[in-house]
Image (tube, rainbow over all chains, first blue to last red; front, side):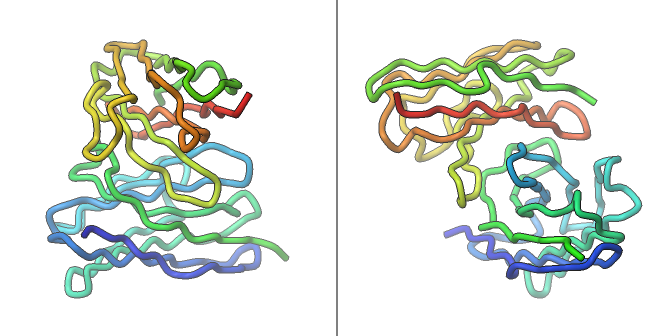
Length: 119
Length: 107
């Protein structure tokens, strides 16, 4: 069965960076894109961007462009999302989600990773 | 960016009720509209794709309709496990955007 398993919770100081991983199983990793979505406490869902594991192409939301880097490792079927220059506004649960293309629905999601930014 | 506006933002309903949630896009998005259910502490779950397609494994009491700018999610007979927050999402253009959510509570 398809599974996306994310790395554990992180606590970071303002200005630091965080890297969240998402290990896929149960399907051919290179055939489906991975999007990253976050939810701040009490807020709605926010799409951050998408990566195509087949060729590494990315599509980032302008809001995080310049601070985010999404990568994949096809040898381990793992997607990674690094966010730099963290502020308290980046405190959120971060999800990876599978979608064939960036405009495809997200049919499978990771369990979420809580990132807390606090001094 | 395309703004997605959901209404109502919250509603109270009883088991067995018919529930309708609407989602309006700030510009036409054809049928690039998906619906998700989210419960606290859980990942979102895809219910409806392409405005009216029922995702595999999702009960038939869920249905979606609409095209262009106006969309509807209907739950024909609300069940206890349906109390959650529902989000619409447009995938017509980047950045992909979600509605603000509709919280369905027990009356």
